[in-house]
Amino acid sequence: MSTSAQIAKVKQNETEIAILQVQVSNLDEKIDDIKSDLKEMRTHMSKGAEDTQKLLKEFQVSNSEQHDIMGKKVATLERWRWTIAGACLLAGALGFDTLAKLLR
Image (cartoon, rainbow, N blue to C red; front, side, top):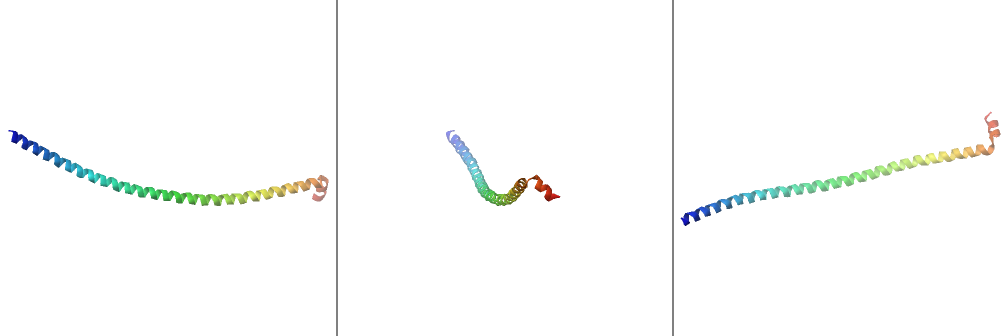
């Protein structure tokens, strides 16, 4: 009876070993899948970082161009303001009577 119990125990151990071998091979496949997914994710992240840097550079160039355009417009307005202020100062210096005579 002890030999049949030992044989049954050996068969049970062999079955458990076979099950564990299948589980280990399944784990190896899953680990390989995870590794490939990580590689893919790393490429997407680096590509995303490159795209973000490219967009930031484009934004900086566009922003600089828009600031230059706005600066030119403000400078033009400043010149007009000083021209009008000078004309008003001249008109005030000449006096209202002189301007009325010039405008007739």
